[in-house]
Image (cartoon, rainbow, N blue to C red; front, side, top):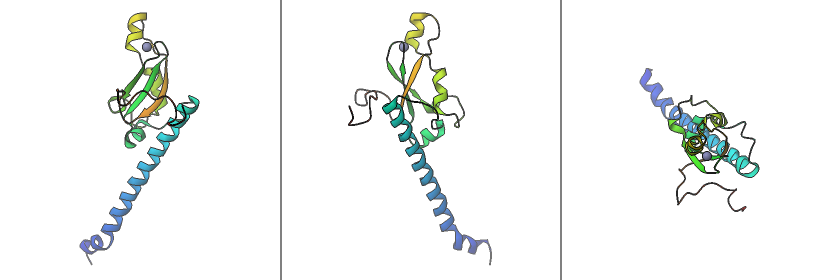
Length: 137
Ligand SMILES: [Zn+2]
């Protein structure tokens, strides 16, 4: 009996168990993102508690959609370039958001914004800003 037979006996089931755990984590992260989005889009908050940056990324939602309360423009922030630990809850980013346009007009950093939702894509013509829960408008 050597290490080779242990690998033969247990290797496949250990790898399968690790794979199942990773799948379950991804499912849990996706459900947490969906639940948060539902609350934000349906009730406009509260934003707290919110999924962590790393959880949103794991659920393939790379962007946070934010509405500036000064100009009402929706913008997206790429979560993978935010320089915060991956354990940072998404709602904590709100106070760092600065609207460039409003800041230029007012000549001070304009940081009043509303978190809208987590998204898999940037805002574009084919992926418009989030408005309401699908089918409920
Ligand atoms: Zn603005």
